[in-house]
Length: 553
Image 1 (cartoon, rainbow, N blue to C red):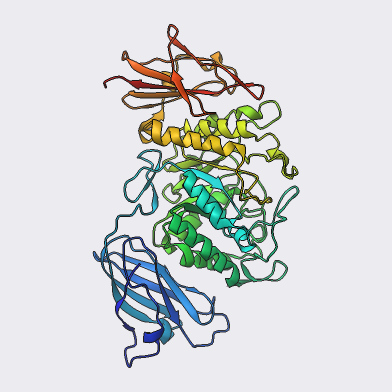
Image 2 (image 1 turned 135 degrees about the vertical axis):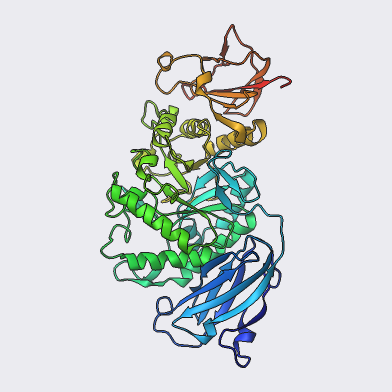
């Protein structure tokens, strides 16, 4: 937290009631949220839109930033900041039109602290993401789009967050606006309270006002995530096919800017805000039609730059795609630094015959991200089906545990973090107390990445595979990753079989790692090839991972 000293009105003069009513934390540390509350007795017709309040900050080395404040009802404005450097800071609160109760300045001290800090995009290091501390980040994520809405309707989201943190998840995909429906039949039956985040209603919206009751719930969940250290990808404009984001003649740019500025003011200071995502499947802009649209690229670039100029804490700005092509390097070539991260979705095969194989993921990733200079995460390959629920989303029909596991390993063997999702918590359904079968498979993969191999040193190394693509049936070609020195080599065989690798003339320790159980067993080459232990699971050939570690290198 953070203390303030010598805080005084900009206008000078006598001590006012403000000196007794301003609230600020008493202990200051790097990357700990400090909240200041300012009270004004002035009556505004609409305090959300009739006055703009922000803080001008100056750091110990002259660095400057501007942070918006937000109205929180009852004549109270709040300012939340989280400086990233120890030392003396200066704060000047400004209001327009000028309100003496909302125009202050002072100084405060920030003490050093050993913290992980914010998630940052480092496309030239590791797998593209790190923390401010320098720790390489492996993203294991879950999709819980309506987490805030579920909490607002009484679900025990705190215990869910605690369980995901204990399981080692580092990120949850969440939307600020709730999605009450997903076509063709995905009504959110759990929704028992209004979650409309603006004033008015869907039929008579007031986009210059905000639902403070709902935002109090969002505050509570964000604070819980902050304490637990689990990241949130905050999706700012939900899906573009939903109201009001599919009605740009109603949701005007002025309302869009007011909406985004308000969310930034409330949440930009939190370390748990790992990513600001502009829109889920951003190509829905501007009319809600699912297709590649160059206008959507221009919107993304414009809004990314605006977001970075308004949100001073420097969180990652991302897009989440719908259509996979053209490649993102081409889409954003006019301003490649505007977008920090692509959250990439590709479901792979999900039909009755080949849904278990999740084939095609690595090829799609390779094609779409070719030449992309930013970071990327494999953020969506389906939502694991719970047969206890009615089939409301037909595309989930064959997304079973096998699809979950193979999709995850394919994503990791392209050297990307992964974010999955489950019908229990994805959207229309609500069962936060129970995990589906595929979740255990993700935890086994996490242990492999973080405890068995030096993940941040590994890169795609398909050139080590001593066979042409034509040697394998579609979807069955092994994937190979290795350290630059080739002291660690791993190969994923999505349908078992044999593999031959072109390795340096070294001695290797070789073992088979079972993605289903997490067990390992010694591997012995037969001539130039390794033959996996085999096995059948649910009528299909079992997948295996071959791990080779050089001896005495």
